[in-house]
Image (cartoon, rainbow, N blue to C red; front, side, top):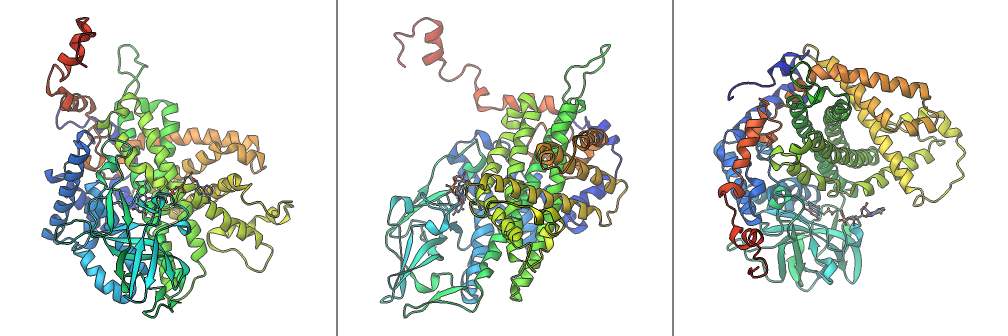
Length: 627
Ligand SMILES: Cc1cc2nc3c(=O)[nH]c(=O)nc-3n(C[C@H](O)[C@H](O)[C@H](O)COP(=O)(O)OP(=O)(O)OC[C@H]3O[C@@H](n4cnc5c(N)ncnc54)[C@H](O)[C@@H]3O)c2cc1C
């Protein structure tokens, strides 16, 4: 039945002010208003339709993505959207595209690594999309180990140019989004060679394609790397391969904010401290943490609404069966994910603040908090993306068989999301960096250098000081354990930032109470999941572990009546969710039934191929059939 809210009885149960929670989730009343307006604008415009994405061929999908990107740009110009609104619009269009890399990596790289002059030359072109950029770092043979990149940039003082070259197959650039078919320019990373001396890996602005007819410039071999995981998903993106054959670029196209090559062929550091370039990396990683809460909340919204609609077993005296959300096992899998979505939202907010703070300090030549900021962004990027990828998959399972249908939205969400565990720093590699930072901090505990900020808790761990550990060296041998320690540190960060959030004033009837319940679920669920570690280190007793588990069960019961309202507070449109199972009105079955008939396979009753392949089987004519 159209217009009927099948989840109204659930919404009526809620014990808090959902509108006030929407503002907490958005971050501020202003952020809510912008987000609400732009998401509805996108949802109501047929030009941004996305429900057919998983049935399109690669070429159709890609062309459709190009159309949407152009249409989004036209909308931004026609409506005079601000930068904030434009970014929201791209977010709600919800299609991986070259524009993500152009705005998210190419422009920040020029801002972070380019000189004033370079910024003045390139940024206006990029802002107007008169050039489209990609970020070409990874090669076929090297990703995580950036210092191992093989592409070379050799300075030629005769012509005042760099010669960019790919000396081996493994030096081919491989993976950059937007490179395959769209980008006109790249920030390409290459080993700088000046006067025969290697000077480490640097970034260069390289034009790839003609601005007249889009053909690759001489010396460039460029294309797409092929189909990726899932239907639709990241196949909308032209991740590319690129080989340079002695391509010449002017000297002023090396990004020279930090180090420079003079026309005489001298390599020198500029006055700008090297640490400044880390700013761009911190920026990108903190946006990935914010995106994690969006992706996880989206999956949780779908699984929660569907769990309230779905009924299995338990009918008494001919009454309705039990909603699967009422099964304790369903709650124990779903509600920690709901709590995680909120936890990641708040730690993301804090990380945004941390980024602003560290940027201000860097500008004042204060680098003291940079190692901590780096450890926080790297660790939280790793923790939240891993938990989100796993969480989306768990939500798919929570939706049973129907979760496996593309129309549930979950398979594509998973396929789009999961590479976040790999790009912008492979998650384990990042945790190893956090572990190194932690070990350095521990090694300095006895000195006058007191840990502050997110590592201040270490001063309180008196027994750490008394620990007698025979291991002096051997980081590599212990790295698997150290990675676990890094994860635990990051979990502590998430919990403590959730608690700090609760110490702020939070308006709205019952809002703070709901958040307290979620915070407790998040913390106790971790304790329950890792109780082996807590017990074996003597941090808790078996009695504590049992009490924590009892409390967790009681907290699940407290969330239950509020579950639908807690996911409504994300304020996602049906368009953004892209899921029949998660639709706002809960009218799942008629929509699933209707969608099935729209599948291309159902265009004819008798399938194409019947006469060649099915009929010969049925008629026992397989031996003479032309197969
Ligand atoms: C969808 C997608 C989009 C991308 N977009 C871009 C882009 O726009 N531009 C770009 O330049 N690149 C891009 N990349 C590439 C991406 O940045 C790299 O894939 C990433 O940095 C990981 O590097 P790798 O592939 O070399 O992994 P590897 O480092 O080879 O990882 C393989 C395994 O080795 C392990 N490992 C590696 N080093 C260590 C170590 N020191 N100690 C212990 N274990 C280790 C890892 O944990 C992992 O399990 C993209 C990738 C994907 C999937």
